[in-house]
Amino acid sequence: MTMDGLKPLAAAALERCDRLARLSEHPLPRLTRTFLSPPMREVHRLLREWMTAAGMSVRVDGIGNVIGRYEGAVPGAPALLIGSHLDTVPDAGRFDGVLGVMLGIAAVEAMAGRRLPFAIEVVGFSEEEGARFGTPYLGSLGFVGRLSPELLALRDANGASVEHAARSFGVDPSSLRFDASRYVAYLEAHVEQGPVLESRGAPLGVVSAIVGQSRRRVRFVGRAGHAGTTPMNLRRDALAAAAEWVVRGVEGCAGWRGGVATVGRMTPSSGASNVIVGEVAASVDVRHEADETRERMVTEILDAGQTIAARRDVVFEVADAAAASDHRTVAMDARLVGRLRAAAGGDDVPLLASGAGHDAAILAPLIPACLLFVRSPGGVSHHPDEHVYAADVERALAAMVRFVESLASDPLV
Ligand code: HGY
Ligand code: MN
Ligand code: MN
Image (cartoon, rainbow, N blue to C red; front, side, top):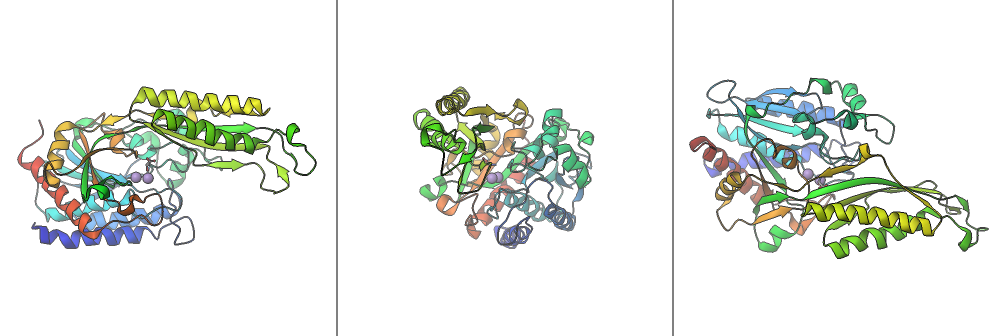
């Protein structure tokens, strides 16, 4: 198909992102769609409609991933897997995740009935952000058969487990099976979510590696008290301890270690202005390209929590291991990186590490994986102002189609 022929397909992919952005757990325009929440049913219905119209058979697996399959010249042949995630963070942008799934469907539409030496499977992973259960990648971990009993037992803020949420949605995690030999490669397209491509004037980038990340849930337990009668030196103020920890422990450590560390969630036990906060539950997200440094950062940040809390007669607790998540830095497949870079425009296409996590990090240890970045204007993401340039999405689709053609004409060995 000519590059002109791709224009309407890329436009349709963007329209579909807009359509999916209206499927939210919150009143619009606030977009929040977490793991198998009610709006995900309509997402499934639309994906099934679009995938079927593109000539794919559609299935939903045991963790709620939606998978469309476009057969190759030989039915049942191993597949090129193209995909990303369908869930969002709270108050999200409309392209993080779903753009990669819509571009996967568009790449199949661009085949226009042509059969390849391999099948194409387009997957919308049910959960990557970790917003509901605090641990990321439940969809792709389920896809590759790595959902441990501990992960299935994780509970959300309402006490519902991952397993219960899946079964309530109508899927059965015990049915999950994965056979890596059924796949030739994995390709993900995703907004960069950072400023690099824009700073380089580049519409597309190719990822060399996905930076490792650690997430922990912690609690500061002091004692609630009267704001007016409790002298400052007699307080066991959990919020004051947590606040000091964020600045001196978390930001301080990231500062001298050169990584990034973020407290994205902090929930005080009381909300009254005249009550000293007795308890605070918080999250911490730590990332660094060097795994050993990231591990050291986690230790230092948690040690700082203990030290600051003790000085304030507050108890610092780290939630049990099941709620902790650690993912190592993962390199993309060098052969595919070269192919994807060539398909995207050659050596001028920036090669960059991804500070954001992506499902490609879960697939890469099992099947050759690569990740195409689309420029994020202003570097904005995880925010309603996240957007893309239509011309860049067209370029991304053209690169994906050229990548598919490259694999078809010169199979990966
Ligand atoms: O958190 C991340 O890095 C990704 O957006 N899930
Ligand atoms: Mn994402
Ligand atoms: Mn995200």
